Image 1 (cartoon, rainbow, N blue to C red):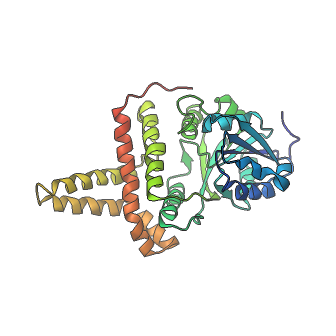
Image 2: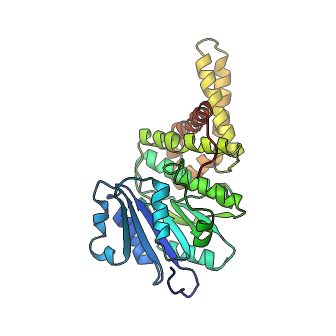
Image 3: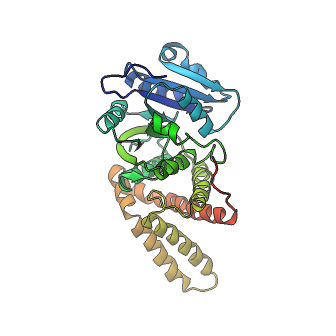
Length: 337
């Protein structure tokens, strides 16, 4: 089912999955509802929340937002598929419940598809003003912003934090995985299938949203290791070492290699004092390989902020090493649907 086309021929169905997102859902929806056109829609799909978050739809928001609910928690892939099945637009825009899009984001997405009928999918980025003020949150969200601005105009993965895809192509490739990748990597794996089907995924970092998530050191490591590095490494191994410039570029490989060398040298210091030279060399390599990141953090924040971010980036890079090692240690079955 489709609504009457708007002036551009692009109708957006904005799909927002939620799970215990009561603290961020209202600001997310308020901007979306204020930004959509008369032929667009916002669909909130509740993945079995226990915090009563769907209740924020009462009142003014409820008249512009369609809500769907699963009685049990079924995972991020299946819950987004439910929203897509009920969508009426010809372009699906996925937005996380902890992202507040910019005032002009909806029209940017519409124009991106209207001006380029051949465009199949796009992903945006977080802006450089993350909401949580603590160092870890600022660093982690600014790292995402920097990565999306410096790693090229094409991606081999999709991103559901702020990403859009034409509805007919989404359906043709089978939507998000509801099996092995239902809870982690559902967007990345979907992007792989898009690319394998001959479609492009455009990186448009000017299409931005503010990330509301607050990180601690522990939650950052958990997110980087458990929900990103390990499953993404397994997906890469399953796909015969498929390259992805967002996670396997040479600077990132060298950064990870520097961390391994630093760890080995630090361990060797107790046995051989010459390991100090190796530790210094590996540390210098790590700093040089990530020079563009330090420059970016200095420009948007300050030099002290960039210096304080160095140990956090060591943890981030270390998580990728540990994640890949963990993926290698566990057999990976063939690709599933």
